[in-house]
Length: 236
Length: 223
Image 1 (tube, chains in turn blue, red):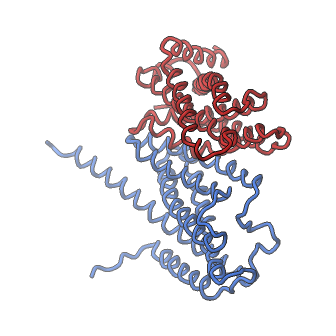
Image 2 (image 1 turned 90 degrees about the vertical axis):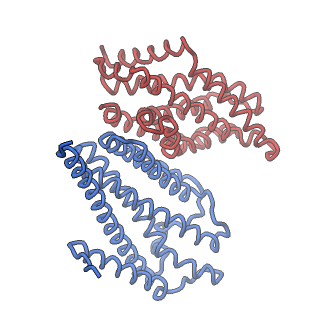
Image 3 (image 1 turned 135 degrees about the vertical axis):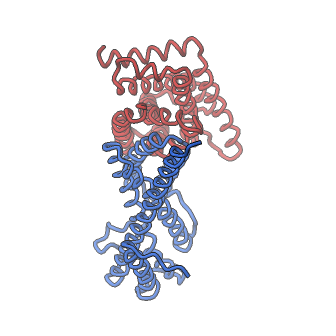
């Protein structure tokens, strides 16, 4: 059996894996059951909050990183910012998909419907669509410089439009539970530790996956460079 | 040439080109008309009162027809090498952006002007009210603003103009929501003061997105 490759990121990877497992335990076993729900199904479903909300926040973090990477790429023109932006989009889409799916799973016992065009859900869907469109734009362009430039522009414009979409929520009646309006965040004190631990675990997971993706992109670039160099040096 | 004159020259060029062929205008107009008729058939059996869906149908028709116009404007530029000509001319890149954007805005507005009476008759709603027209113009402005930037990107891709709806719709959603809400409210008899939030949202969308598009247009057209 080949030996496992150990490098600087291995400790981070292991830490992320452990953190996620511990978060699972805290959320599913340790955290107290909610007090003000009607059915048993809703009581179990409430535990999704330990995953659903952290995934949503990490998803937005990922898109913020994409925005910063896009701005930096337009400003400096260095390929590494483009790599950062595109890698973060992919991870962000994964987390946003998880958010939407976990939200839907929670919604069925809580609201008796899988989906509703509640503004917050609509915003999340629109954000998700913007970043899927980002990937489609990238895949439709062949020239690497143009691809990086256009993607960066779309990343900037897309990100700017999200807060505007978000504000539509404030002015609609919404049935989505609002986490920050009440003084204790809608979570009892015993629930706060599992929640914030879960948030930390998934943020760590985000960084770990992001780092690996960035590495893959850099290796792909290196392969392209070596390929071009080899083809150029051969005497035909 | 001053900045405004540059913009005016580009708009004038587009208008003259369009007056000669009328191909973009006629396809936009026919498409909008077809969309209105098809929606009529699509919803008629389900909806008791056609006026309830009128705002949505109006904005969907305007959006799709506008998409056609946005596409054509840059496809023509690229195919005939006009874009290179524009870039070589001593005009600011931002003048090109505003010129194309205002040209697109003008074309879509003309189509709307003709569609609106037809629409009002088919759906039996009175859309020719001052504030509804204001909302229509504001929505079209924001749509053209972002759409011009994205169509400049889309023409360079393999998928060409098919990519424009994919890029444009998610970003234009807030403007669309606000416009439909405002139109529906105005048809119901509410005043703009009641719906100040939505008006602010629409104006904010226009201002912010046009500013961002103007700032990033350089990166899209340079080679």
